[in-house]
Image (cartoon, rainbow, N blue to C red; front, side, top):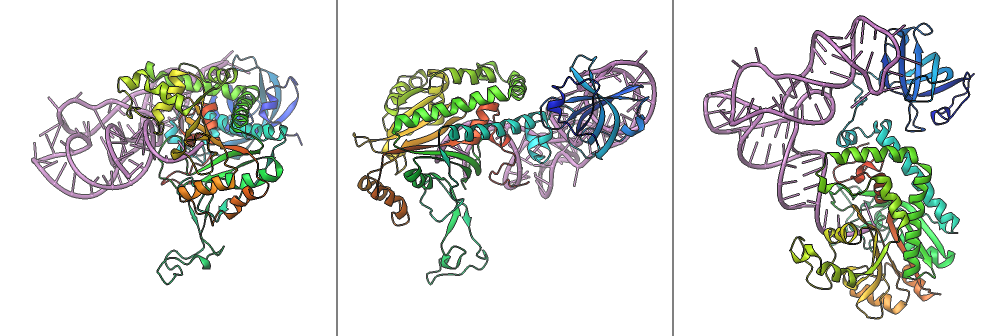
Amino acid sequence: MIKRIKIVNLLKSKDYGKVVNVKGWVRTKRGSKNVSFIALNDGSTINNLQVVVDHSVLMEEILQPVNTGAALSITGEIIQSPGSGQSVEVNAKNIEILGLADPDEYPLQPKKHSLEFLREIAHLRFRTNTFGAIARLRHALIFATHKFFNDKGFYNIHSPIITGSDAEGAGQMFRVTILDPKNPPLNDDGSVNFHEDFFGKATNLTVSGQLEAELAAMGLSEVYTFGPTFRAENSNTSRHLAEFWMIEPEMAFYDINDNMDLAEEMLKFIIKYALDNCSDDLAFLNKRLLEEERSKKPEERSPMELIEKLRFVLENKFERITYTQAIDILKDSNPNKKKKFQYVIDKWGIDLQSEHERYLVEKHFKKPVIVTDYPKEIKAFYMKMNDDGKTVRAMDVLFPQIGEIIGGSQREEIYDSLLKRMREMNVPEKELWWYLETRKFGTVPHSGFGLGFERMVQFITGMGNIRDVIPFPRTPLNAEF
RNA sequence: UCCCCAAUAGCUCAGUUGGUUAGAGCGGCUGACUGUUAAUCAGUAGGUCCCUGGUUCAAGUCCAGGUUGGGGAGCCA
Protein backbone atom coordinates (compact mmCIF):
# COMPACT_ATOMS: atom_id res chain seq x y z
CA MET A 1 0.00 0.00 0.00
CA ILE A 2 1.45 3.31 -1.04
CA LYS A 3 1.04 6.04 1.54
CA ARG A 4 -0.97 9.15 0.72
CA ILE A 5 1.03 12.35 0.47
CA LYS A 6 -0.51 15.79 0.83
CA ILE A 7 -0.16 18.08 -2.15
CA VAL A 8 1.50 20.84 -0.12
CA ASN A 9 4.36 18.43 0.67
CA LEU A 10 4.43 16.82 -2.75
CA LEU A 11 4.92 20.19 -4.44
CA LYS A 12 8.04 20.76 -2.31
CA SER A 13 9.40 17.28 -3.01
CA LYS A 14 12.38 16.52 -5.19
CA ASP A 15 12.02 12.73 -4.97
CA TYR A 16 11.77 12.32 -8.72
CA GLY A 17 10.90 8.75 -9.67
CA LYS A 18 9.22 8.00 -6.35
CA VAL A 19 5.75 6.48 -6.59
CA VAL A 20 3.19 8.20 -4.38
CA ASN A 21 -0.54 8.36 -3.82
CA VAL A 22 -2.49 11.64 -3.79
CA LYS A 23 -6.15 12.22 -3.13
CA GLY A 24 -8.11 15.34 -3.90
CA TRP A 25 -10.72 17.10 -5.97
CA VAL A 26 -10.48 17.93 -9.65
CA ARG A 27 -10.30 21.64 -10.40
CA THR A 28 -9.94 21.31 -14.19
CA LYS A 29 -9.42 18.55 -16.66
CA ARG A 30 -8.14 19.17 -20.17
CA GLY A 31 -6.94 16.80 -22.77
CA SER A 32 -5.69 16.14 -26.25
CA LYS A 33 -5.37 12.94 -28.24
CA ASN A 34 -2.49 11.38 -26.38
CA VAL A 35 -2.43 13.01 -23.00
CA SER A 36 -4.77 14.53 -20.40
CA PHE A 37 -4.04 16.94 -17.56
CA ILE A 38 -5.83 17.13 -14.24
CA ALA A 39 -5.40 20.00 -11.81
CA LEU A 40 -5.90 18.36 -8.42
CA ASN A 41 -6.39 20.16 -5.10
CA ASP A 42 -6.69 18.67 -1.61
CA GLY A 43 -7.00 21.89 0.38
CA SER A 44 -3.54 21.58 1.93
CA THR A 45 -2.36 24.50 -0.22
CA ILE A 46 -3.82 26.92 -2.70
CA ASN A 47 -1.57 25.42 -5.37
CA ASN A 48 -2.87 22.60 -7.55
CA LEU A 49 -0.98 19.46 -8.46
CA GLN A 50 -0.73 18.76 -12.15
CA VAL A 51 -1.49 15.11 -12.83
CA VAL A 52 -0.47 13.87 -16.27
CA VAL A 53 -2.39 10.98 -17.79
CA ASP A 54 -0.64 9.37 -20.77
CA HIS A 55 -3.33 7.65 -22.82
CA SER A 56 -0.94 4.87 -23.79
CA VAL A 57 -0.54 4.03 -20.09
CA LEU A 58 -4.10 4.61 -18.88
CA MET A 59 -7.18 4.32 -21.03
CA GLU A 60 -8.82 7.62 -21.75
CA GLU A 61 -12.20 6.02 -20.90
CA ILE A 62 -11.29 6.03 -17.21
CA LEU A 63 -11.26 9.81 -17.31
CA GLN A 64 -14.42 10.12 -19.39
CA PRO A 65 -16.83 10.69 -16.45
CA VAL A 66 -14.29 12.77 -14.49
CA ASN A 67 -15.10 16.45 -14.31
CA THR A 68 -14.52 19.51 -12.18
CA GLY A 69 -15.49 18.60 -8.63
CA ALA A 70 -14.84 14.84 -8.83
CA ALA A 71 -12.77 13.23 -6.08
CA LEU A 72 -9.87 11.03 -7.19
CA SER A 73 -7.22 8.85 -5.69
CA ILE A 74 -4.19 8.86 -7.95
CA THR A 75 -1.09 6.75 -7.73
CA GLY A 76 1.84 7.78 -9.86
CA GLU A 77 5.42 8.82 -10.20
CA ILE A 78 6.79 12.20 -9.12
CA ILE A 79 8.53 13.84 -12.07
CA GLN A 80 10.15 17.15 -12.80
CA SER A 81 7.67 19.07 -14.93
CA PRO A 82 8.66 19.95 -18.47
CA GLY A 83 5.82 22.51 -18.50
CA SER A 84 6.18 26.07 -17.31
CA GLY A 85 3.43 26.44 -14.68
CA GLN A 86 4.91 24.14 -12.04
CA SER A 87 8.17 22.45 -11.10
CA VAL A 88 6.74 19.10 -9.99
CA GLU A 89 3.98 16.94 -11.41
CA VAL A 90 2.72 13.37 -11.14
CA ASN A 91 2.61 10.83 -13.95
CA ALA A 92 -0.51 8.78 -13.22
CA LYS A 93 -0.18 4.99 -13.18
CA ASN A 94 -3.52 4.27 -11.56
CA ILE A 95 -6.64 6.37 -11.04
CA GLU A 96 -9.45 5.46 -8.69
CA ILE A 97 -12.62 7.49 -8.78
CA LEU A 98 -13.75 8.15 -5.20
CA GLY A 99 -16.73 10.29 -6.08
CA LEU A 100 -18.05 11.81 -9.28
CA ALA A 101 -19.61 15.25 -9.61
CA ASP A 102 -22.35 15.33 -12.25
CA PRO A 103 -21.50 18.33 -14.44
CA ASP A 104 -25.19 19.00 -15.08
CA GLU A 105 -25.67 19.63 -11.38
CA TYR A 106 -22.31 20.63 -9.92
CA PRO A 107 -22.38 24.43 -9.74
CA LEU A 108 -18.66 25.24 -9.53
CA GLN A 109 -16.76 25.87 -12.74
CA PRO A 110 -13.14 26.66 -13.43
CA LYS A 111 -13.95 30.36 -13.68
CA LYS A 112 -14.56 33.37 -11.50
CA HIS A 113 -17.79 33.16 -9.52
CA SER A 114 -19.37 36.07 -7.70
CA LEU A 115 -19.07 36.05 -3.91
CA GLU A 116 -22.86 36.42 -3.72
CA PHE A 117 -23.34 33.21 -5.70
CA LEU A 118 -20.80 31.35 -3.58
CA ARG A 119 -22.62 32.44 -0.42
CA GLU A 120 -25.66 30.57 -1.72
CA ILE A 121 -23.58 27.40 -2.03
CA ALA A 122 -21.61 27.79 1.19
CA HIS A 123 -21.47 23.99 1.50
CA LEU A 124 -19.28 23.85 -1.62
CA ARG A 125 -17.34 27.09 -1.47
CA PHE A 126 -14.47 25.53 0.53
CA ARG A 127 -13.47 24.05 -2.85
CA THR A 128 -12.65 27.42 -4.36
CA ASN A 129 -9.31 29.18 -4.27
CA THR A 130 -10.67 32.19 -2.41
CA PHE A 131 -12.51 30.31 0.32
CA GLY A 132 -9.75 27.75 0.71
CA ALA A 133 -7.31 30.59 1.26
CA ILE A 134 -9.64 32.29 3.76
CA ALA A 135 -10.22 29.05 5.67
CA ARG A 136 -6.50 28.35 5.95
CA LEU A 137 -5.81 31.94 7.01
CA ARG A 138 -8.64 31.91 9.53
CA HIS A 139 -7.17 28.81 11.09
CA ALA A 140 -3.71 30.37 11.21
CA LEU A 141 -5.11 33.48 12.90
CA ILE A 142 -6.92 31.39 15.53
CA PHE A 143 -3.70 29.53 16.20
CA ALA A 144 -1.68 32.76 16.34
CA THR A 145 -4.14 34.24 18.83
CA HIS A 146 -3.75 31.31 21.22
CA LYS A 147 0.01 31.34 20.71
CA PHE A 148 0.25 35.05 21.49
CA PHE A 149 -1.63 34.76 24.76
CA ASN A 150 -0.04 31.46 25.77
CA ASP A 151 3.44 32.89 25.23
CA LYS A 152 2.54 35.82 27.48
CA GLY A 153 1.22 33.61 30.28
CA PHE A 154 -2.48 34.29 29.74
CA TYR A 155 -4.99 31.53 30.49
CA ASN A 156 -7.82 30.72 28.12
CA ILE A 157 -11.17 30.80 29.91
CA HIS A 158 -14.34 29.24 28.53
CA SER A 159 -16.98 31.75 29.49
CA PRO A 160 -20.56 30.45 29.41
CA ILE A 161 -22.50 30.44 26.16
CA ILE A 162 -25.85 30.33 27.94
CA THR A 163 -26.20 33.22 30.33
CA GLY A 164 -28.76 33.90 33.00
CA SER A 165 -28.08 37.58 32.97
CA ASP A 166 -29.67 39.95 30.51
CA ALA A 167 -27.68 42.82 31.91
CA GLU A 168 -24.52 42.53 29.89
CA GLY A 169 -25.61 45.62 28.05
CA ALA A 170 -24.44 44.74 24.56
CA GLY A 171 -27.64 44.55 22.59
CA GLN A 172 -30.60 42.27 21.93
CA MET A 173 -30.21 38.66 23.01
CA PHE A 174 -31.41 35.30 21.71
CA ARG A 175 -33.69 33.60 24.24
CA VAL A 176 -32.79 30.03 25.22
CA THR A 177 -35.81 28.06 26.38
CA ILE A 178 -37.45 24.63 26.39
CA LEU A 179 -40.91 26.06 27.03
CA ASP A 180 -43.62 25.41 24.45
CA PRO A 181 -43.85 28.66 22.47
CA LYS A 182 -47.53 28.02 21.71
CA ASN A 183 -48.52 27.27 25.28
CA PRO A 184 -45.99 28.52 27.85
CA PRO A 185 -46.73 28.39 31.58
CA LEU A 186 -48.01 31.78 32.73
CA ASN A 187 -47.86 33.83 35.91
CA ASP A 188 -51.03 35.31 37.37
CA ASP A 189 -50.34 38.59 35.56
CA GLY A 190 -50.14 36.83 32.18
CA SER A 191 -46.34 37.00 31.81
CA VAL A 192 -44.35 33.84 31.00
CA ASN A 193 -43.35 31.89 34.12
CA PHE A 194 -39.69 31.12 33.57
CA HIS A 195 -39.47 29.32 36.92
CA GLU A 196 -40.75 26.33 34.95
CA ASP A 197 -38.07 26.68 32.27
CA PHE A 198 -34.96 24.46 32.16
CA PHE A 199 -32.77 26.70 34.35
CA GLY A 200 -35.64 27.99 36.47
CA LYS A 201 -35.06 31.45 35.07
CA ALA A 202 -34.99 33.27 31.75
CA THR A 203 -31.78 32.51 29.88
CA ASN A 204 -30.14 33.81 26.71
CA LEU A 205 -27.15 33.24 24.48
CA THR A 206 -24.18 35.31 25.57
CA VAL A 207 -23.47 38.72 24.06
CA SER A 208 -20.08 38.97 25.77
CA GLY A 209 -17.80 36.93 27.97
CA GLN A 210 -16.31 40.02 29.56
CA LEU A 211 -18.01 39.96 32.94
CA GLU A 212 -17.04 36.33 33.52
CA ALA A 213 -13.52 37.00 32.23
CA GLU A 214 -13.21 39.75 34.83
CA LEU A 215 -14.07 37.24 37.55
CA ALA A 216 -11.34 34.92 36.29
CA ALA A 217 -8.79 37.73 36.04
CA MET A 218 -9.43 38.46 39.75
CA GLY A 219 -7.69 35.21 40.60
CA LEU A 220 -5.57 34.30 37.60
CA SER A 221 -4.30 37.80 36.75
CA GLU A 222 -4.29 37.49 32.97
CA VAL A 223 -6.93 35.59 31.05
CA TYR A 224 -8.66 35.66 27.68
CA THR A 225 -11.80 34.20 26.20
CA PHE A 226 -12.20 33.22 22.55
CA GLY A 227 -15.71 32.06 21.97
CA PRO A 228 -18.92 32.46 20.02
CA THR A 229 -20.98 35.54 20.71
CA PHE A 230 -24.59 36.15 19.73
CA ARG A 231 -26.40 39.38 19.02
CA ALA A 232 -30.04 39.40 17.96
CA GLU A 233 -29.76 42.84 16.37
CA ASN A 234 -31.35 43.34 12.99
CA SER A 235 -28.03 44.43 11.52
CA ASN A 236 -27.69 44.27 7.76
CA THR A 237 -24.16 45.40 7.03
CA SER A 238 -20.94 43.96 5.66
CA ARG A 239 -19.37 43.96 9.14
CA HIS A 240 -22.05 42.47 11.44
CA LEU A 241 -23.01 38.88 12.18
CA ALA A 242 -25.66 37.50 14.55
CA GLU A 243 -23.13 34.80 15.54
CA PHE A 244 -19.48 35.78 15.64
CA TRP A 245 -16.31 34.95 17.50
CA MET A 246 -14.84 37.36 19.97
CA ILE A 247 -11.49 37.49 21.72
CA GLU A 248 -11.72 39.13 25.13
CA PRO A 249 -8.54 39.47 27.22
CA GLU A 250 -8.96 40.69 30.77
CA MET A 251 -5.96 41.66 32.87
CA ALA A 252 -5.60 42.47 36.54
CA PHE A 253 -3.14 45.28 37.36
CA TYR A 254 -3.34 46.74 33.83
CA ASP A 255 -4.33 50.36 33.36
CA ILE A 256 -5.69 51.84 30.13
CA ASN A 257 -2.19 52.38 28.72
CA ASP A 258 -1.12 48.80 29.40
CA ASN A 259 -4.39 47.80 27.74
CA MET A 260 -3.59 49.79 24.59
CA ASP A 261 -0.06 48.42 24.47
CA LEU A 262 -1.43 44.87 24.63
CA ALA A 263 -4.04 45.50 21.93
CA GLU A 264 -1.47 46.94 19.56
CA GLU A 265 1.09 44.23 20.28
CA MET A 266 -1.51 41.52 19.75
CA LEU A 267 -2.79 42.84 16.42
CA LYS A 268 0.75 43.20 15.15
CA PHE A 269 1.73 39.71 16.31
CA ILE A 270 -1.19 38.15 14.49
CA ILE A 271 -0.61 40.13 11.30
CA LYS A 272 3.07 39.16 11.37
CA TYR A 273 2.15 35.52 11.91
CA ALA A 274 -0.06 35.62 8.83
CA LEU A 275 2.65 37.27 6.73
CA ASP A 276 5.24 34.74 7.91
CA ASN A 277 3.11 31.62 7.56
CA CYS A 278 0.47 32.19 4.90
CA SER A 279 2.40 33.80 2.07
CA ASP A 280 0.83 31.73 -0.76
CA ASP A 281 -2.71 32.41 0.39
CA LEU A 282 -1.99 36.09 1.03
CA ALA A 283 -0.39 36.45 -2.39
CA PHE A 284 -3.53 35.00 -3.94
CA LEU A 285 -5.83 37.27 -1.92
CA ASN A 286 -3.62 40.23 -2.77
CA LYS A 287 -4.08 39.49 -6.46
CA ARG A 288 -7.79 38.86 -6.02
CA LEU A 289 -8.28 42.24 -4.35
CA LEU A 290 -6.26 43.98 -7.02
CA GLU A 291 -8.50 42.54 -9.74
CA GLU A 292 -11.62 43.41 -7.78
CA GLU A 293 -10.46 46.99 -7.33
CA ARG A 294 -9.89 47.37 -11.05
CA SER A 295 -13.64 47.52 -11.53
CA LYS A 296 -13.94 50.35 -9.00
CA LYS A 297 -13.66 54.05 -9.68
CA PRO A 298 -10.07 55.25 -9.17
CA GLU A 299 -11.03 57.45 -6.19
CA GLU A 300 -12.62 54.47 -4.39
CA ARG A 301 -9.61 52.24 -4.81
CA SER A 302 -7.43 51.43 -1.85
CA PRO A 303 -4.15 53.36 -1.95
CA MET A 304 -2.24 50.22 -0.92
CA GLU A 305 -2.27 46.60 -1.97
CA LEU A 306 -3.28 44.06 0.68
CA ILE A 307 0.19 42.83 1.69
CA GLU A 308 1.59 46.34 1.53
CA LYS A 309 -1.18 47.47 3.89
CA LEU A 310 -0.46 44.65 6.36
CA ARG A 311 3.24 45.54 6.36
CA PHE A 312 2.37 49.18 6.85
CA VAL A 313 0.24 48.45 9.93
CA LEU A 314 3.03 46.27 11.27
CA GLU A 315 5.71 48.91 10.86
CA ASN A 316 3.85 51.95 12.17
CA LYS A 317 2.84 52.85 15.69
CA PHE A 318 -0.90 53.26 16.11
CA GLU A 319 -1.93 56.88 16.64
CA ARG A 320 -3.34 57.45 20.11
CA ILE A 321 -5.69 60.39 20.64
CA THR A 322 -8.39 61.30 23.11
CA TYR A 323 -12.00 61.71 22.13
CA THR A 324 -11.64 65.45 22.82
CA GLN A 325 -8.69 65.69 20.40
CA ALA A 326 -10.64 63.69 17.83
CA ILE A 327 -13.54 66.14 18.06
CA ASP A 328 -11.15 69.07 17.59
CA ILE A 329 -9.56 67.48 14.52
CA LEU A 330 -12.96 66.64 13.03
CA LYS A 331 -14.38 70.10 13.79
CA ASP A 332 -11.52 71.74 11.89
CA SER A 333 -11.56 69.21 9.04
CA ASN A 334 -12.43 70.18 5.51
CA PRO A 335 -15.42 67.82 5.13
CA ASN A 336 -16.89 69.23 8.33
CA LYS A 337 -16.41 72.87 7.29
CA LYS A 338 -17.81 72.15 3.84
CA LYS A 339 -20.67 70.17 5.43
CA LYS A 340 -19.67 67.04 3.55
CA PHE A 341 -20.30 64.91 6.63
CA GLN A 342 -23.83 63.65 6.93
CA TYR A 343 -23.52 64.35 10.66
CA VAL A 344 -21.74 67.66 11.18
CA ILE A 345 -19.53 67.85 14.25
CA ASP A 346 -20.70 70.84 16.22
CA LYS A 347 -20.22 70.05 19.91
CA TRP A 348 -18.34 67.89 22.39
CA GLY A 349 -20.31 64.90 23.64
CA ILE A 350 -21.78 63.45 20.47
CA ASP A 351 -20.94 59.92 19.37
CA LEU A 352 -18.51 59.49 16.47
CA GLN A 353 -20.18 58.14 13.33
CA SER A 354 -18.60 55.72 10.86
CA GLU A 355 -17.81 58.57 8.49
CA HIS A 356 -15.88 60.38 11.24
CA GLU A 357 -13.90 57.31 12.24
CA ARG A 358 -13.05 56.64 8.62
CA TYR A 359 -11.92 60.22 8.13
CA LEU A 360 -9.55 60.00 11.11
CA VAL A 361 -8.09 56.65 10.04
CA GLU A 362 -8.09 56.87 6.24
CA LYS A 363 -7.65 60.58 5.56
CA HIS A 364 -6.14 62.35 8.56
CA PHE A 365 -3.71 59.90 10.17
CA LYS A 366 -3.62 57.27 7.41
CA LYS A 367 -2.98 54.49 9.95
CA PRO A 368 -4.78 52.70 12.78
CA VAL A 369 -6.00 55.07 15.48
CA ILE A 370 -6.84 54.43 19.12
CA VAL A 371 -9.39 56.88 20.52
CA THR A 372 -9.58 57.11 24.32
CA ASP A 373 -11.40 58.96 27.08
CA TYR A 374 -14.92 59.12 25.68
CA PRO A 375 -17.79 60.99 27.37
CA LYS A 376 -19.31 58.70 29.99
CA GLU A 377 -22.78 59.13 28.50
CA ILE A 378 -21.94 57.19 25.34
CA LYS A 379 -20.08 54.29 26.98
CA ALA A 380 -20.88 51.28 29.17
CA PHE A 381 -21.48 51.31 32.93
CA TYR A 382 -18.37 49.31 33.87
CA MET A 383 -15.80 51.72 32.44
CA LYS A 384 -13.41 53.51 34.83
CA MET A 385 -14.33 57.13 35.45
CA ASN A 386 -11.62 59.73 34.91
CA ASP A 387 -10.87 62.40 37.51
CA ASP A 388 -12.75 64.98 35.43
CA GLY A 389 -16.01 63.14 36.18
CA LYS A 390 -17.03 63.55 32.54
CA THR A 391 -15.00 60.98 30.62
CA VAL A 392 -14.24 57.28 31.03
CA ARG A 393 -11.09 55.30 30.29
CA ALA A 394 -12.45 53.68 27.15
CA MET A 395 -10.43 52.85 24.07
CA ASP A 396 -11.60 52.06 20.56
CA VAL A 397 -9.10 50.76 18.02
CA LEU A 398 -10.11 51.96 14.55
CA PHE A 399 -8.88 50.29 11.38
CA PRO A 400 -9.19 51.41 7.77
CA GLN A 401 -12.30 50.16 5.90
CA ILE A 402 -13.73 48.12 8.77
CA GLY A 403 -13.83 50.78 11.49
CA GLU A 404 -13.96 49.62 15.08
CA ILE A 405 -12.00 46.39 15.43
CA ILE A 406 -11.50 46.60 19.20
CA GLY A 407 -13.54 48.17 21.98
CA GLY A 408 -12.17 48.13 25.49
CA SER A 409 -11.54 50.01 28.70
CA GLN A 410 -10.01 50.13 32.09
CA ARG A 411 -12.75 48.80 34.38
CA GLU A 412 -14.28 50.64 37.34
CA GLU A 413 -12.82 48.81 40.34
CA ILE A 414 -14.19 51.02 43.13
CA TYR A 415 -17.33 49.47 44.56
CA ASP A 416 -19.22 52.67 45.32
CA SER A 417 -18.39 54.28 41.97
CA LEU A 418 -19.47 51.17 40.04
CA LEU A 419 -22.74 50.89 41.98
CA LYS A 420 -23.45 54.57 41.34
CA ARG A 421 -22.94 54.13 37.60
CA MET A 422 -25.14 51.03 37.54
CA ARG A 423 -27.96 52.92 39.21
CA GLU A 424 -27.55 55.91 36.90
CA MET A 425 -27.76 53.65 33.86
CA ASN A 426 -30.51 51.35 35.18
CA VAL A 427 -28.34 48.23 35.24
CA PRO A 428 -30.05 45.73 37.58
CA GLU A 429 -27.59 45.47 40.48
CA LYS A 430 -29.33 42.45 42.00
CA GLU A 431 -28.69 40.30 38.95
CA LEU A 432 -25.02 41.25 38.92
CA TRP A 433 -24.39 40.68 42.59
CA TRP A 434 -21.47 38.40 41.75
CA TYR A 435 -19.88 41.03 39.54
CA LEU A 436 -20.16 43.64 42.28
CA GLU A 437 -18.61 41.27 44.83
CA THR A 438 -15.29 41.28 42.96
CA ARG A 439 -15.09 44.99 43.89
CA LYS A 440 -15.90 44.14 47.47
CA PHE A 441 -13.23 41.49 47.99
CA GLY A 442 -9.67 42.32 47.03
CA THR A 443 -10.52 44.67 44.20
CA VAL A 444 -7.68 45.78 41.92
CA PRO A 445 -7.33 48.07 38.90
CA HIS A 446 -7.87 46.00 35.75
CA SER A 447 -8.53 46.36 32.05
CA GLY A 448 -9.62 44.44 29.01
CA PHE A 449 -11.00 44.63 25.52
CA GLY A 450 -13.07 42.80 22.97
CA LEU A 451 -11.80 42.06 19.49
CA GLY A 452 -14.20 40.97 16.78
CA PHE A 453 -12.36 38.03 15.29
CA GLU A 454 -14.13 38.13 11.92
CA ARG A 455 -13.34 41.83 11.52
CA MET A 456 -9.68 41.01 11.98
CA VAL A 457 -9.98 38.20 9.41
CA GLN A 458 -11.64 40.71 7.07
CA PHE A 459 -8.76 43.12 7.46
CA ILE A 460 -6.07 40.49 6.92
CA THR A 461 -7.78 38.79 3.95
CA GLY A 462 -9.03 42.01 2.37
CA MET A 463 -12.54 40.61 2.12
CA GLY A 464 -15.16 43.34 2.03
CA ASN A 465 -18.07 41.34 3.44
CA ILE A 466 -17.90 39.66 6.86
CA ARG A 467 -20.16 36.86 5.54
CA ASP A 468 -17.20 35.63 3.50
CA VAL A 469 -14.73 35.21 6.38
CA ILE A 470 -16.82 32.80 8.49
CA PRO A 471 -17.71 29.39 7.04
CA PHE A 472 -21.45 29.53 7.76
CA PRO A 473 -22.61 33.07 8.41
CA ARG A 474 -25.62 33.75 10.60
CA THR A 475 -27.38 36.99 9.66
CA PRO A 476 -31.00 38.16 9.75
CA LEU A 477 -33.09 35.75 7.63
CA ASN A 478 -30.12 33.50 6.96
CA ALA A 479 -29.38 30.30 8.90
CA GLU A 480 -29.06 27.87 5.99
CA PHE A 481 -26.32 25.25 6.23
C1' U B 1 -35.15 49.07 11.08
C1' C B 2 -34.23 53.29 7.38
C1' C B 3 -32.26 55.08 2.38
C1' C B 4 -30.52 53.62 -2.58
C1' C B 5 -29.81 49.82 -6.38
C1' A B 6 -30.57 45.09 -8.65
C1' A B 7 -33.07 40.24 -10.16
C1' U B 8 -32.94 37.52 -17.95
C1' A B 9 -29.64 30.16 -19.75
C1' G B 10 -25.77 26.29 -14.73
C1' C B 11 -22.40 31.04 -14.05
C1' U B 12 -21.18 36.35 -15.62
C1' C B 13 -23.94 39.63 -18.29
C1' A B 14 -26.31 42.40 -22.96
C1' G B 15 -31.34 43.22 -24.44
C1' U B 16 -32.77 50.03 -28.26
C1' U B 17 -38.71 54.25 -27.68
C1' G B 18 -43.22 48.79 -25.15
C1' G B 19 -43.47 45.62 -31.18
C1' U B 20 -42.23 39.26 -34.91
C1' U B 21 -39.09 33.39 -32.98
C1' A B 22 -34.96 36.70 -26.09
C1' G B 23 -28.80 36.97 -27.25
C1' A B 24 -23.22 36.66 -26.07
C1' G B 25 -19.02 34.77 -23.31
C1' C B 26 -17.85 30.97 -19.98
C1' G B 27 -19.44 26.06 -18.43
C1' G B 28 -22.02 21.24 -20.29
C1' C B 29 -22.37 17.63 -24.30
C1' U B 30 -20.23 15.62 -29.29
C1' G B 31 -15.97 15.68 -32.24
C1' A B 32 -10.89 17.42 -33.78
C1' C B 33 -5.98 18.29 -31.90
C1' U B 34 1.79 15.67 -30.48
C1' G B 35 2.63 18.47 -23.22
C1' U B 36 -1.80 21.52 -21.68
C1' U B 37 -1.84 25.78 -17.79
C1' A B 38 -9.32 28.87 -16.55
C1' A B 39 -5.71 24.87 -23.37
C1' U B 40 -7.33 25.72 -28.45
C1' C B 41 -10.77 24.89 -32.77
C1' A B 42 -15.67 23.22 -34.87
C1' G B 43 -20.61 21.75 -33.87
C1' U B 44 -24.72 21.29 -30.42
C1' A B 45 -28.32 21.40 -26.39
C1' G B 46 -29.91 24.75 -22.76
C1' G B 47 -35.10 30.08 -20.74
C1' U B 48 -41.50 29.97 -15.40
C1' C B 49 -37.04 36.93 -18.31
C1' C B 50 -37.91 36.50 -9.31
C1' C B 51 -43.44 36.27 -7.68
C1' U B 52 -48.55 38.38 -7.68
C1' G B 53 -51.63 41.85 -9.74
C1' G B 54 -52.38 46.07 -13.08
C1' U B 55 -51.95 49.43 -17.67
C1' U B 56 -51.90 48.25 -23.04
C1' C B 57 -53.92 45.75 -29.36
C1' A B 58 -49.04 44.13 -27.47
C1' A B 59 -44.80 43.79 -21.31
C1' G B 60 -38.14 40.94 -20.27
C1' U B 61 -39.10 46.38 -20.95
C1' C B 62 -44.15 50.66 -17.88
C1' C B 63 -46.94 50.89 -12.80
C1' A B 64 -48.19 48.84 -7.68
C1' G B 65 -47.28 45.32 -3.89
C1' G B 66 -44.19 41.35 -2.29
C1' U B 67 -39.69 38.12 -2.11
C1' U B 68 -34.53 37.63 -2.37
C1' G B 69 -29.72 39.73 -3.01
C1' G B 70 -26.17 43.93 -2.93
C1' G B 71 -24.33 48.95 -1.29
C1' G B 72 -24.83 52.68 2.55
C1' A B 73 -26.74 54.22 7.64
C1' G B 74 -28.02 52.88 12.72
C1' C B 75 -26.90 49.15 16.72
C1' C B 76 -21.63 47.24 17.61
C1' A B 77 -17.08 43.69 17.58
